[in-house]
Length: 131
Image 1 (cartoon, rainbow, N blue to C red):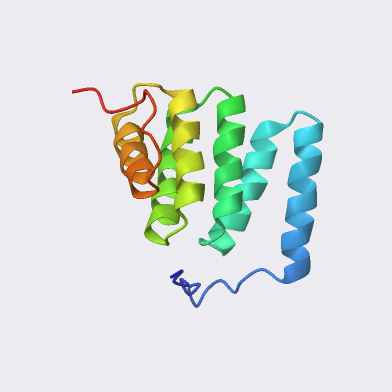
Image 2 (cartoon, rainbow, N blue to C red):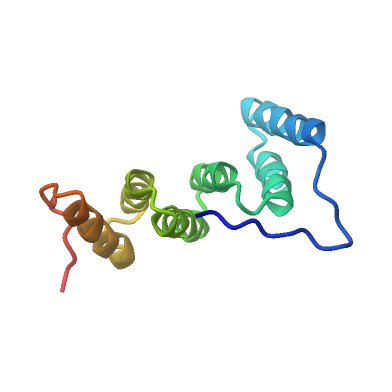
């Protein structure tokens, strides 16, 4: 179950049109190769709506493209944990696999993937935890 975090009294949520404007601007920055500006726009959207896991995932993708792998892995793990906690196991699996593409030795991703594959009664691939 997703829980909504109320914005502080100082900041009201962005209007729908402003969210759309930020999204269009971020995509334009990506097309132009201005990845840091796109990341800033996506962060503004996440700051307004912390439950926006798609935008948070997109920030991680952009961080990978800017070679900030450690930051990207942190964001991916945060997204995957939230998907897992909310019961979206297939989405969590996809994000944990993305983490392993960035860092094949990442132990938390290996452990959680092993659990998720077991839960879905799928054969555990070769990324089982290294002891």
